[in-house]
Image (tube, rainbow, N blue to C red):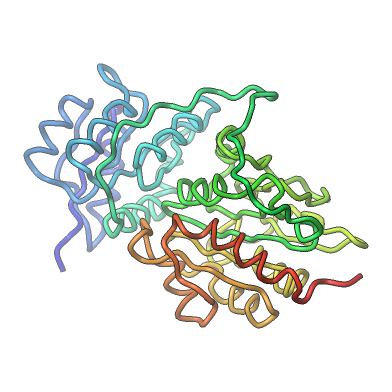
Length: 364
């Protein structure tokens, strides 16, 4: 099998050297060139046609976001961003994913050599996922303006009010590589009286707050990081904080969020398996499960438990996934009722919710 050919773009000579070393140690990949700035990178990419590019965000002469935007329009290539773990870095990373980057890794603030060595396996896994991803040519996408707290949301289309169904039902979403934009597309299609949505997106600490704020500025739902013990309300979406597991519990007549530390599950924290297992155990037939793009099998077994408990499950189809791993494994486990293109999932959830209005609900 041909090696994955990688170009490393970073203004730090140390980071370039470390990434090249990690890549060249792998039996299935090789670093075919490094560049210290986007102008040198442009010529190098044109010359060697890499399978994957790792790209720093903060660089001289042209920042990584501008270069990424141009690359996705002119020569779409799988890109893994290398970003700093700061509030500004997190916001820039979210923008990079919107522009078409497949995934990202965060540079440690201190001890770059030691920190990156600890991330070597993760970096190489993300390069492998990027090499298998589907990249589409991007048109210009203006950066979203920051939304004020009282800014008007997008108008809702005329739909039948969901009433008590919004309180009785819950929607559970699991995603990984490519999932930040896939989750956005599902959420923006949901009405403001949607049942509460719980989301586990594989993401490290420091990035989920910016991601939740970005989603909140775009959706008719209120989107925020989940807080342990809070009541789950219709019209709200709750994102697992990076580095913590999210699950659901019952408290009297209410559903509540549980946000806990713990060991990684399927190598992930937060883990989709943890969220979906709680959905099967606590919500049963009141749950709707959605598995979106991502590498690996996290959540597949628990999604089958959801189906066995009476939940209705949808998986994203291969053609619209960036990486088809997690949906493929869930489908293979017999967890899916439907396999749909990404753009159909939100609408189909609401159709199925209306169709089950007279079906079983949780009685307290």
